Length: 350
Image 1 (cartoon, rainbow, N blue to C red):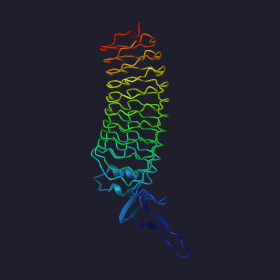
Image 2: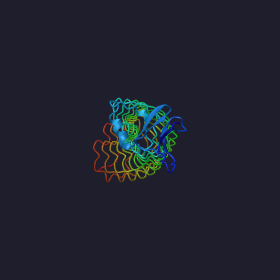
Image 3: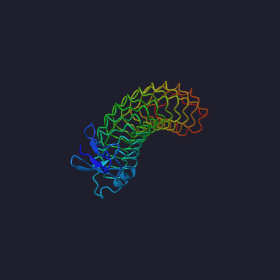
Image 4: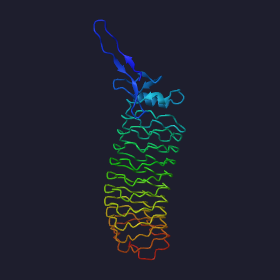
């Protein structure tokens, strides 16, 4: 390493020089700044000049890129803590592989709309990041291996890969134990079908729209801990391939199941033992779920207020639901409209 030295020697007293420099991390990729270096300083490493930046400088330089001629790979980001909304640039792509993000806590919306971004960021140390919401939303060509990322501090993954249409990487080893929000995480991620069944979801309260329109997804997620979940609205809406055993899910705290399996055309699993006693909304829950025909006549639906279109176009459903307590249901229009196979008794809404 070639340090950049700042300091001076007094005639009467020898002062030890202050050394500020950049160096290569042990991973062989990341360029880091020494602790005593300051934003705005430049230093040389391996014959190249690097600029040490802080939050404000980084955002300004990226805002002007590429017209400002800055080489983003020559920015040392060790002093940066906030990368939120950093790259809202359609068609944008640059080599960011050597960035030091070890002190960054917020990556929300970082690459949202960067539909040309496809840089290798596999060696990033994201262990300090708490917010990855919307991080790759609409980054439609991004598909790099980020399986080794340490996401153990992340609490928010809302819309993280939403509309990331090409993304399909192995994320099975991610530590998601701190995540509370996975809503829309893979919505419209049409290529994604990674095995994520061993994720720790014990802190997640919202799964709303998580796999909506994720047309390839059909991973085994039956062992997920859903005991803290409150919102499963549209979780598998238009997830046309999904048909996994989720019979053991603890949904006892869930209040919202509207459109949960809407147009989940292949889904037909035994969910008869689900405790849905706290659910208040089942609007369109099984609408267009063409193959669904599970025995759910024993469900406690006494808290449900809305059953509009719950089984609309559920073409194979035919179960006896006459024992359902629907006293609180005030909206039930088109409850079983065009559910053409249903001949057994229906709930008594009168």
